[in-house]
Amino acid sequence: SVKFDWQDPLDSKSLLTEEELAISETAERYCQERMLPRVLQAYRDENYDAAILSEMGELGLLGANLDGYGCAGASTVASGLITRAVERVDSGYRSGMSVQSSLVMGGIHTFGTAEQKDKFLPGMAQGKLLGAFGLTEPNHGSDPGSMETTARPHPTKKGYLLLSGSKTWITNSPIADVLMIWAKLQETGKIRGFLVERKDCPPGTLETPAIKNKNGLRASITGMIHLDDCPVPEAHMFPDVEGLTGPFTCLNSARYGIALGTMGALEDCIERTRTYAMERKQFKNNPIAKYQLVQKKLADAATDAAYGTLAAIQVGRLKDEGKATPEMISMIKRQNCDRALWNARVLQEVFGGNAVSDEYGIGRHVANLFVTQTYEGQSDIHSLILGRAITGLQAFV
Ligand code: TGC
Ligand code: FAD
Image (cartoon, rainbow, N blue to C red; front, side, top):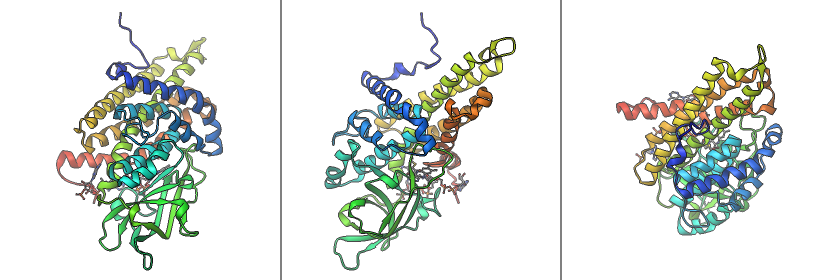
């Protein structure tokens, strides 16, 4: 007879292919066996272990939905199942891989020349070459179209441009070998994408200081990027893409990964809360899991995780068929991040005073999930993207 499975209430597994199930299993095993044991200390020390990316590379988990260059060529849903496995452990670890896989590798794969792809993608797929994605600036976050970073022709060196400006809140920037920088061509004012290689930057032209003392996403490394007349060969500019379409196309993939990823974090919150509530006894030796108010919290969270997962699988399928719109991705990114954060905050209550101890893990997810609601388009910005699509009226300005 068919039984209700509280860990997969709407049987999302039945929608997955054999290959997707196998990739998901490999990712879950790696994350639980190799990542989970180090996350608490990493979070306490605010220390990102870059070896994680090379370990994931060895397992074929980076850029998994890309074809060629040592990538697995799997489906969009498969890549989302990997982010879900990683984010079940920690959103910061998922951040490190989202930037590598979706933003930087995905951008090079979509917009790069044959030479750029050959040069960067195989090393990035192995996690030996690390990437960062520089869009946000100190004065322009939700509105990247107003960016101030510029690229001007090199006055003396033919075939080179000079990049100047600052980017902030950039995941992986302090450790990245390749920095994808979005800047306006001084001549045209149009946004273009550049691949800056740290090893080729003369001293003083590229600085990437870490941003320390974060109160969320502490297992991920975040920093700034300062460019001071940093020379970059014209051959490292994406040849054809112009305007915000470039960075936003990369963001479509990364936002998709976050939508399924946050469901992993929420599922971990549910599992931790259920375990705790079954063991913790109050009032006549009853487990607190027996009380209706606690059960409602678990029911709400399990429902949101199940709905969010199904919606993300549907959008992933449409994406592979070329039928997904950016608004669909805004919808699942916004909804899944918001519901994961809301439920995690409510489930935290079940732990009573112990919620304050980092050993229970729930507080770490709550702090991380605030960040997921903020980056790659804050939820209210996604509301406005949806509102514009619904009414035809834009409310940004
Ligand atoms: P708008 O007029 O809407 O669009 C400008 C041009 O861009 C095109 N476009 C898209 N193309 C592909 N995919 C999308 N999702 C696209 N959205 C827009 C659009 O067609 C247009 O093209 P064209 O040819 O007509 O010029 O531009 P706007 O300036 O009015 O934009 C407004 C808004 C709010 C939608 C946009 O600026 C926005 O999404 N803001 C949020 C910023 C954001 O998401 N930043 C993310 C930074 S990266 C990051 O956070 C990484 S964290 C990673 C981690 O650690 O996991
Ligand atoms: P602001 O744009 O100043 O927004 C502040 C508030 O105002 C938000 O609530 C927003 O919704 C609201 N708001 C703004 N405009 C409007 C409007 N028109 N109507 C209504 N409300 C509005 N960026 C990168 O480029 N690469 C990265 O790798 C990266 N990694 C990150 C890692 C971390 C840990 C964090 C915290 C951020 C990262 N970001 C990265 C930056 C992130 O994308 C931005 O923080 C985000 O886009 C919001 O921009 P902002 O912080 O400047 O906020």
